[in-house]
Length: 285
Image (cartoon, rainbow, N blue to C red; front, side, top):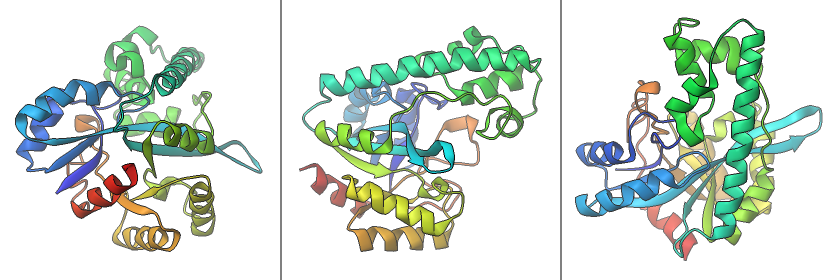
């Protein structure tokens, strides 16, 4: 079994990179990809230990993007996974990611201010102490739970932090097409994460978007994911085959912040075949 979508404390997970390697070994995983948001920090910290423990560690990242759409001023939120970078991560891509991180910090400052306007004191310093350079909405949610404003992370999102909630503050994100182009130019393999979230249940629009990304250079599609029911898995496998995309998959493990999602197996519904890794590896050349 393999897991090609996990997170560490370098973004919004609760396991350190080193802990995640040990958890993967204990779970019997043959290969693991760390896909922290907008940073390679988790992978780079975990790589030496993974090598010593005999775990195949795949270089990965998850990039938050937006897909423009008529009638939706914010566009559609699309998370792009990227893998391998066998020649090393080019400095141009690292500089671009640094710009994304600065945009994230600016959004966090404005989000803290917006929560204060709603009567919730959520100091940015406390949020940053949890998430450090990659602090984001999950870290705001954890502070809100600790301060007693909400009972759970999910309630924080439902009442305040979700895109349709009153405290939501948009941050500048690149277009999906731009992100695909930048990753491809840097030697990475691109995949759309959890496609079930793409179009709010509109299957026609969902497939149109995937086809558009494929035309822009997308190479793979996350078929297996904790949010995917069996019929979703079958649908995305069929779309991937029809478009010539490589199937991928992973749990989207975040540790204790999402306790129902387990490493390797998700909610008990994820079993990513090791064979899929070979298809992705061929794309990397």
